[in-house]
Length: 334
Image (cartoon, rainbow, N blue to C red; front, side, top):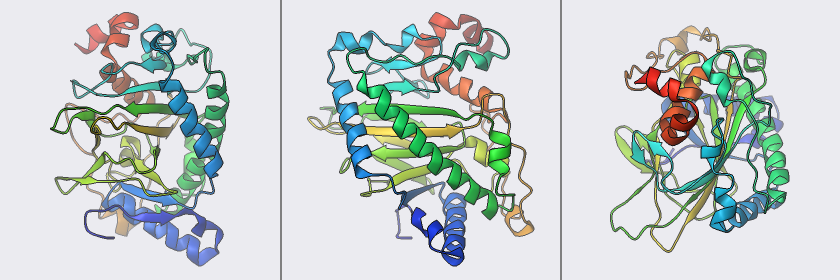
């Protein structure tokens, strides 16, 4: 691994025989123990699908403001739909980006734990009906990649191959289509502030040639520019929890581009059902000896139950939605 860079793993090694597959698993374990981030090439995802998704993103953000605001997330108690520039916060500070959040298409649930309020329908732009189709194809394709990755992780951590399949339930996925507009400020601006992902696994597609993502390594911020044909992959807090800290969720952020440039990125979050918790993995002795425990941060507790982690993140990121639709939760947390 070159200094101040992220490791690059080739997913196609899994199809090149037992030795290559074992090598991939070793590299996967090392990358997520040492860094928590890596580039993933060789997924077999077609450039044509990537191009269609990219164009759909460009078309969405080019819609008239009224069309985007018609599906603004303040109209969704499930935190779905469009967030205008400055409408999301990280660690209490405004993020300079606009986006649309898309989750599993489901009927609302009116009872049960508070995190059930995250279940419900998406908000789709009437002026762009084709967006729903390309997102559905992207979701299916990346779900397959995610499931296979998790099976390899399970094996390299000493668990059964189906560990994640057995405990995930129906996945709680989230796709965010994000645009970071350029700023004229000479100082770097917060596109999205430093944070850790709240779930298990994130696969990030970044517009070719557009930098801005930074990963924290050894107390310093390291640039993670896009690599042609690769996803940026990182683990979330639940995978840190399930491994007793052997794998670590890593802080990352995005610095806004300089105007007139902008940047499209599309993260895909693959997580368990809201009501699922991942049992602790019984690591082999040599790995358990290197497990440093789950990060203790009173301002950001890591919950074992995914729904509690997800709700924590949504309430913090979108206080306007929370205040409109969930004032009881806001009052309780205060």
